[in-house]
Image (cartoon, one colour):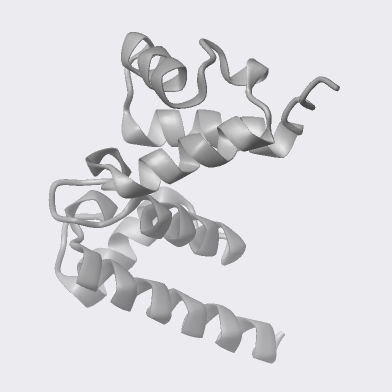
Length: 130
């Protein structure tokens, strides 16, 4: 029985991670081949997908910036900002005002965690008042 291909959401996630990590195409394809045994994400099965995601989580690639913020934190922050209806400039201004940083890319892991909690609180407050 042939392994089933990835669904579109998982395939999209692979491409989002590639973009967020700023991987060049040759590096990305090398990682795909080394970790999952394929040269293209469209050829991944669920097992290969899990291997690839595990690789990114455990490697330095998963750090979204040199300060230690993880890709998971970065994506979650962007998701919360989107849920709030904020554009990137609104998020950047929020970070400048409350965290005295130049934007998302300047955050370390600890500050990113604090920002996540702040955004969750803002979202909960807006949800209650609507």
